[in-house]
Length: 382
Image (tube, rainbow, N blue to C red; front, side):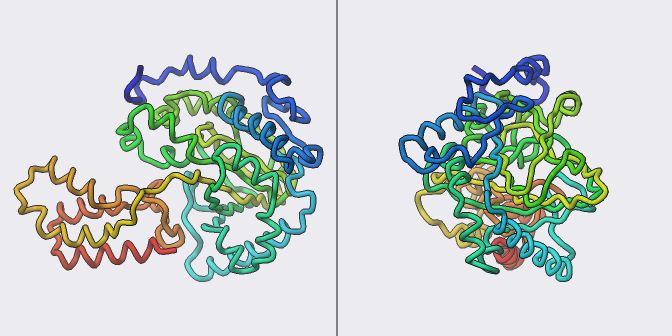
């Protein structure tokens, strides 16, 4: 049994075998069609399967199996039979984009170069604060709720970020998503293999189409079945894996009001918008399961401030210092306020633990470190 994954031992031939499977109709009996190995579900036809508890569970079981063992992708056609909430939310998000550009030039983005992309971080809260009635109609969607519960169970945690790509917007490189997909290759390699197995079931990636998305507008490039490759978080940065992705990916056109969901372990990337006039807008849903929380509330900033002036003189060797900091400082970048604490220069903002180590290395005073901690916390606030 593999204990750790590293890029050098990833097997492209095995990856190819996994991704060259075919989805069978018997695997997705509730689907209206299969296109390019992706099951397409007509939401209007699902009827009581979205409401009746027993029928809903059978549908959710199919979705969970498909996300894990099938092609890893689900399309909900007509997730919004009435697209008025989509249009209302789009108007609000366009206003937010304009206001944020006036204020600070817009937000940084994951995986994509600056240019024709506009990003609205925390579009969930911004929609609700601008118009709670629109929010209620938008997120009061039983089909989206069922997909989230199918993968994550009840009491999931919804977050969302709008991405607007204008004509000329470039494509993303193939990648995997949050959690491990947002870590550097070095950090990802430090996590044991069973955590690589766990990461995909902690979140669900989705997108609500706010515009029609013909293929030339660059809907998400997807590689069916790629989520099944266990070492994928170590492999996705390799040139040969990315080259194979570019040879093999599929794209599906979406209509306004459709929704796309896929495993965060799926190799994917936004396509290039080569259209002349399509403003491709999607609300990207990052949904987390309920249990991703510690048992106790800890004021780690206070602990760090108390610990900093003594740790260098406590008689600890460097390895012991690292252990003490690991027990005290927050070592993960998320959750954070991505408007104030964007992932500039990387996939994730600086952690409290990284700041602690940097301050020690630079010989900061206790006061300077405390002020830096306070400034970091201010940027992370909701």
